Amino acid sequence: MEDVILSRIPMHRLGTDADLAGPLLLLASNHSDYMTGQVIFVDGGATA
Image 1 (cartoon, rainbow, N blue to C red):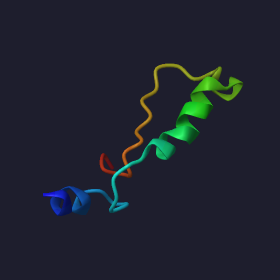
Image 2: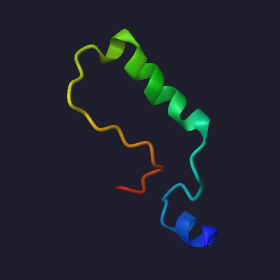
Image 3: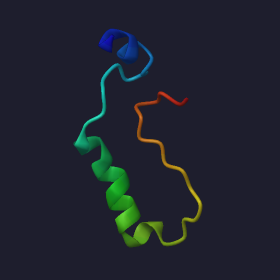
Image 4: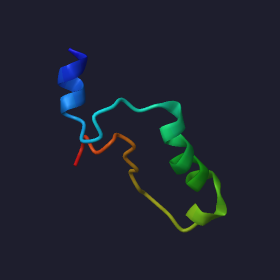
């Protein structure tokens, strides 16, 4: 079953906690002050 899931993800691996570090740091920093109403997908390209 895991092979089926991984075959549908372009990066061919499941995400880890570390994969969220970059987006979370962006959202917690001043660099995201002007962002509003965005959806940030951290899914290895599965929704592309």
